[in-house]
Image (cartoon, rainbow, N blue to C red):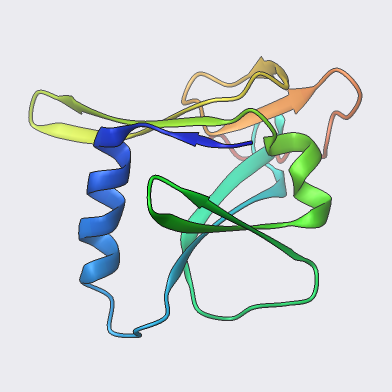
Length: 119
């Protein structure tokens, strides 16, 4: 299960409404790399695959590849305004190590493959 706060959902819906393709959805995923071993992937997509799992969260269509579910189960996404900036924040209960920027993590059972470049 993935949780998206009301604030984050509103911001994502605004961003989705600005997309030109009518059937866009939010794709969440994990890629190898980042300073801790894995990096979060979050973006809009309209291409579906057989490896996808679909969820409806806060009236948003969320798609995650089956292999990434083990890393993202329990994920909480929020959106915070901070002075003149704002951004999405991610809390992952599966992460045992995270980097300072919050975009990279590793789990107790999988260290991923850290990259040499900082966040």
